[in-house]
Amino acid sequence: MAKTVHIIGSGFSSLSAASYLAKSGYKVKVFEKNASIGGRARQFKHEGFTFDMGPSWYWMPDVFERFFGDFGKKPEDYYKLDKLNPGYKVVFSENNSFEVSDNLDEIYKAFDEKETDGAKKLKKFMDNAKSNYDIAIKKLVYKPGESPLELVTPATVGKVGEFFSNISRDVEKDFENNDLKQILKFPVLFLGARPQDTPSFYSFMNYADFGLGTWHPKGGFFSVVKAMKELAESLGVEFQTNATIEKIDVNQSGRVKGIQVNGETLTADYVLSGADYHHTETLLDEKYRQYSEQYWDKKVFAPSSLLFYVGFDKKLKNVNHHNLFFDVDFNQHADDIYKTPKWPKEPLFYANFTSLTDPDTAPDGCENGFFLIPLAPDINDTEELREQYFHKIITRFEKLTGQSVQKNIIFKKSFCAKDFKNDYNSYKGNAYGMANTLLQTAFLRPRLKSKKVKNLYFTGQLTVPGPGVPPALISGKLVSELIKKYD
Ligand SMILES: Cc1cc2nc3c(=O)[nH]c(=O)nc-3n(C[C@H](O)[C@H](O)[C@H](O)COP(=O)(O)OP(=O)(O)OC[C@H]3O[C@@H](n4cnc5c(N)ncnc54)[C@H](O)[C@@H]3O)c2cc1C
Image (cartoon, rainbow, N blue to C red; front, top):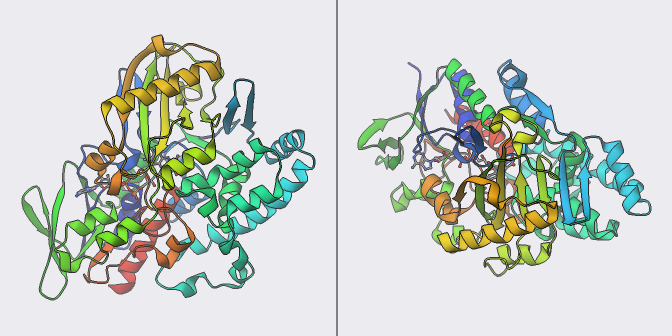
């Protein structure tokens, strides 16, 4: 008889693992506490507006191709992908912004216009970024983090120095123009730490950005969730929503006996959790937890975020699909997140308007907006502060884009640290997991396989390889391989 695997949570990592395990012959069931699947990538609709609640940047399309390819499929079998051009816009002031083209040659030209030898310097930087991408994303991230030796390959030996320098230092050394420096330091923010704390080797994110481009799945990022669910169901995976796992029961010999869900105990041969790692460990009796509260408290977490989902009753001008508002001090805001956690006086923010390129995501003549301010984890989160900060950014937005929009808001919903905790059991209300710093890379991250409970496994953004949707897909693959290996 097929062995059973119960999976906690239905984020990308769980969805990925579910399909790999089902394909290998396991009987898989996914339990999700919320009413809808997708985890941080849930979607909601309101009177013709569609809002993706979390991810919006579809980067590293090759990782998605590889995932679907493992099942003899292609992303296009499920959803339509468009490469955005421009990929995104960075706003530095009312009269100064930079659009990142979908074409590397165009980006070289734009760098040359901003700085002497800009193209030449960028070419050198990108050649190295591409070589890092080929090493990291094609090979290293597909290692399960069981041993430091996984990182030692002829290719990485030549790159040792890049693990001990950082992105910020490299960019500051190679470039002079402040706008270009900010643009080059942006991609690693997806890894959850400051560019000063992110090893140079992670410049592969710059290749993902300029080299591979920014894509949009039609219908929004949730189209990818739907695709993965369809694939999983075709392999026999079952889903149960509104199913909160309350406890993981372990027997005398240190094996999971079962999980408690909605007052019922269900037995399984394996339990795999894609819920936040810290939360999952609290479902175990203390002696079965691998990491102490002090351990978690010392880790660098990705920021929390204040989000607004906004419906406008008119089309907006002077904005692109993705927009970064970098018109205030980047370093000060980073310090307010990582060094002395507090609400930033003048926050940077990000906004997307998917209805500009995907008109079905808003009613005719309207625009949907998603606004994000990164904040320190565990920030004090009140309605008053949320409103105060909405006012701050929307006023700046009006000035920077030269239009009034406040009177055109017909829908607004916020989401912040408290919601990350309530909805996802997120540790300290982190938005996207544990950062990838040098000491939180590969085998130094929380493990995929429990050391204390034999048939308990973990996946997702707090374990290997790290935060983001592509790593979540990879994490699901890695953990499914480990389950098979130790079965
Ligand atoms: C605002 C925001 C913007 C982002 N932008 C991007 C982006 O543009 N591009 C990108 O690549 N990545 C982005 N990310 C990161 C990306 O969304 C995440 O890294 C990824 O979706 C995490 O997937 P996961 O499977 O690890 O976890 P999650 O999506 O958090 O899934 C965990 C699931 O477990 C469930 N759960 C928790 N506790 C229990 C329980 N006791 N019982 C049952 N279920 C439980 C939760 O409800 C949740 O559904 C963003 C994240 C956020 C929040």
